[in-house]
Image (cartoon, rainbow, N blue to C red; front, side, top):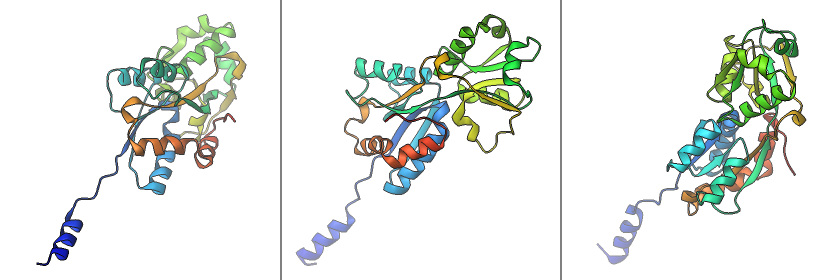
Length: 246
């Protein structure tokens, strides 16, 4: 075989360089949105995105313990800042990708606020305030309204905001303090009432993304991170019920 032919055989026999996948850690409230974002990004680039969801506090703990995530989409600004400070994330990569909205939701009660005031109206579902920013916001709202002490006796805690929504949707709780973005879920029963909790009644639900240290040299992760800031991605986030920052 001639030298030129040998070169061509070697060239085409050489294995293609694999494109690295991206693994993202996503707060439960943002899971559906992240799934759509990931699908769009994969369609555009051919890069595989793996999505792992849970409460912000638990995902944060997993990252500290070496979980193999590339990008963290938190439900708060606190944990990304701590990861940046501790060296677990790329410096100056934090940005706000969404502003969350807390709502009261019930499939049975016709007056959401009346349920909170009536001690005989059944259980109230919220996310665990120790690990979930939406749970913490729910406690702040109820405390500020002067009804936390009474309501706390009826509270059922979800491990995350997704489980809190599940409690309310299945009737295991009469009402839930959940994320507005969850109301778009196609399998959700028709609500008997919804009420948007004033943003001024609780801490700001500023949701930040950050590029994690293990992905500093992962070009696929950086491309996904950049995609999150694009107009295309921001429109998807807006459609899912989030507010956007300039």
